[in-house]
Image 1 (spheres, helix red, strand yellow):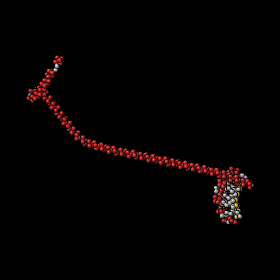
Image 2 (cartoon, helix red, strand yellow):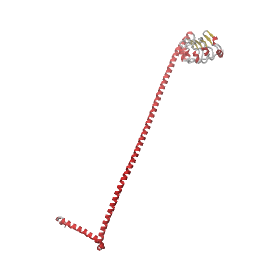
Image 3 (tube, rainbow, N blue to C red):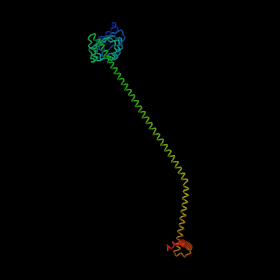
Image 4 (cartoon, rainbow, N blue to C red):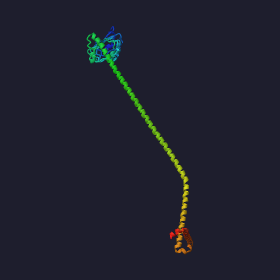
Length: 310
């Protein structure tokens, strides 16, 4: 029976009470939608087909109690396989399974399990045992469920550890980001403070320059006013000084001329000329005055001093 025939046909015709046998049907896909329409089919035989994988939708068939998937080519079961919570009997004999999904631990009602002839993980194979009879298959179900619970717990712990690490890393990144943002804000504040300080210095320098310019301007005005008031007095002083100089030179000239006249009129042939009468008279008066002064000085000297001089 081909896959297309199964899909097109009416699966209700194959339903025997609560059992649905689709074994040896040459199927490589499971008609999940048609099976979901048969909730009475709690016992499902899909053995001896060509299944490589089971679709995730298959795990929605929670009404299944007994499932036979033996002698297929299944390499793994869907991660949601644990949703088949009503499953009690599971036959996975002769497939290509190496490990079971973590959700397998949720199959709390599982009482019978066969995992023979699968390339199982060594730890899982050791737990599963041989399952050569009913008792061993029941023990296999219990042991595998316990083993998968441990695996799930370890995986949960690992996931929790990874989650905590991710949270720690995230918090660390957030802290580093906040520190980085704070450093950037601090740098911006410092840069603004530097800019403000530069502007303040520039403003103060400009104000000082303006005050200096105003001071220089005021000094220049005062200097100009002072010069305007001082120059006339200085000019008057210079004029008085120039007149005094001229008068002094004039008097010196007259004195030299008088002396010259006396010398000429006394010791040259012009002494008897009429032009020298006045200079000679003046000269005679001066000489007489000097002679009188010497005689008076001798009279007034003490007698002792005259003898010593003799």
